[in-house]
Image (cartoon, rainbow, N blue to C red; front, side, top):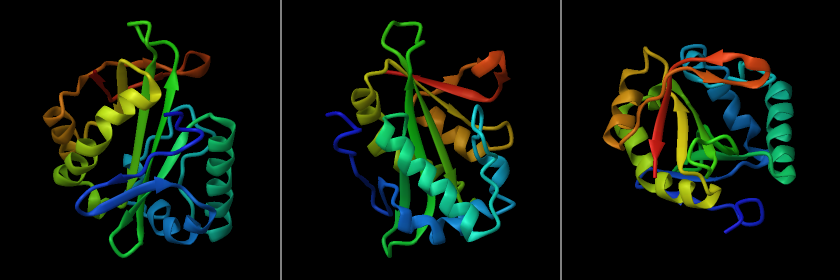
Length: 183
C-alpha cells in the first residue's frame, strides 16, 4: 500500500486515527494551545514549535500538513475520540538513512496532556507499529520521548523500543530523547 495514495486508518478501542483534514483545525487548536502539553511535542527539524493560540495559526499549520501529505513528505493523522473530538495528531515519515539499508521512519505523536498516559500510547502503538514498518518500508522507527515523559517511555518499552541516543537532524543539529524500534 502506498500511504500517499491510500492513507491507512487506525482504530483502537478509544480512538480513530485518520488522515488530517482542514476542518480539524478548530478542534486541534485546544491541543496545540495547551501549554502543559507543548513540552511533549516533537518539533525537531520543523519550522514551528507547534504552539498556537489563534484559529488562524492552527488553520495555516493544518493546511501545511495537508499540503505536505499531497507532496508525499509525511502523513499526519488526527487522533479522534469516539465522539469525533480531536485530541492530538500523529505523524510518520521515512528517512533513507537507516543503518540496515531499509530506511528509518520517524513517528511523532502530539496529544493533549490528559492523554499522555501509558495506556493511551500502548493502545495506539498496538495497532500502528507493525503497519507503519510495512507501509513506510523501514526497518527502524524512531520516536521522541522527553526525559520527563515517563508514561510515554513506559509504553515504548512495552512495545520493544529502546533508547536510541542523540540523532542528527538537518544542518548537523543534534536532538536527544529518541527511542528506536526495529522490525
